[in-house]
Length: 431
Image (cartoon, rainbow, N blue to C red; front, side):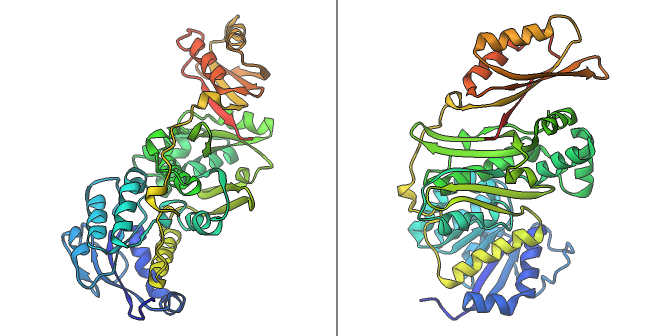
């Protein structure tokens, strides 16, 4: 039976989200208490800089210079970890919290992607809750939707736009016809991208989130190391224009599927048909699609980052804990999670967009066509555009449906050719 005493919370990390949690608990205090069946109170906090002005009153809370001490406090039921990072202080705090028999709420997708199975086992051993709704898609309740709302369904596919920075950049390029580097600089100036944006633009952040979603959707062990990861650094404004001409929009999409040949997970730029819901997800929004065998297609969409949306997800997890709703972190006991092998992407079939920057000379198109023919790739259409500033010419190919192994073989044949200026771009066509 749920206690009527307030749920006592220790908060580690007072950045954007930590401040948002404090403001949300204060602004909606009475409503939250009614929905939780009891109050939720922060009793202690910890961060790197005690003197920093965060726009919230932290004098009302006990302060711990050593973050790990939050797990040892007798007046704490739950620790909220908002430090970030897959290892270091965040992981040490998570382990200490669960070892002490206390529940843990985290927004840390990197930690859950790398250490989620270990932490789930520790939570189950301690009969403590481990909640991480805020780790995927910010304020969008996709984890709860898959874990609880779709619990009766077999989920075979889960895919979506999982990184707001990349989506902001791609939709800005689409709307204004500008190239990647210029839009990235603007995104950094506006705060949508970090000073070092590598985790976002190279697909790593989305891969962390995809591995978490795949585990919940399919009942498999988290397998971040098996996510094939590619980013958007090499997408040109010309690629986005070509996609529009063909009836597509370019999006960074994470795709996961479970089947008889194993678990397939990939983050990669895709051409998305204009009539698909993901084609209309713009700006810094996130969206996830899951397909259940009885419920059909489910679409979760909303703000994937920011203090308000992410704090909303954190506090929703606290409300669940206040109600006594624990349950296995990954929808089933950790011991029941399958250890599927990584599926071979070469066996997958689909259509592809291939872009080459080539020397403007006779014979180049024939060389590309011959490589495709020899690898068994059937060409649906081929486009050649005018010379760029460096004298190179853009050649874009759309393939017929076929095995991915054949496309990879064709690109291997062309690798190192003096006719090519740089690496080809391969984007899968969502279908």
